[in-house]
Length: 154
Image (cartoon, rainbow, N blue to C red; front, side, top):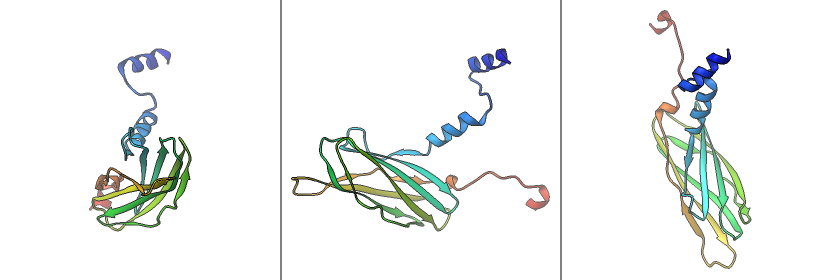
């Protein structure tokens, strides 16, 4: 057993199969929304479940200021509908917060989720805005492999 596992490890094979594939597939669902050098860093995890998309957005304050009224503003393009608007939060220096947002899918076609992060800084006369990268929802995210017999197919 040890020699088999060692030879598979040296050859780059997988033992058990699905564990490594599942974690790699999960990592593909992450989308970087801002650059690492932006004052506010954001990344999103997309969980597609038939007609619902749960968007889990991590926002990190990379400044030495307290961000007040930090709001994630999202909009959709295509047959996607944003269900709820995330509530504003206060992020202290080097703090982070996870916003969760639900998106309903009306049809299985491609769509785009876009938006920005708006926040206030004490002493500033205007709101700061960080524009987010677009999240493209692909039709392949909805397709789930299944099996059926020849009779059922016909």
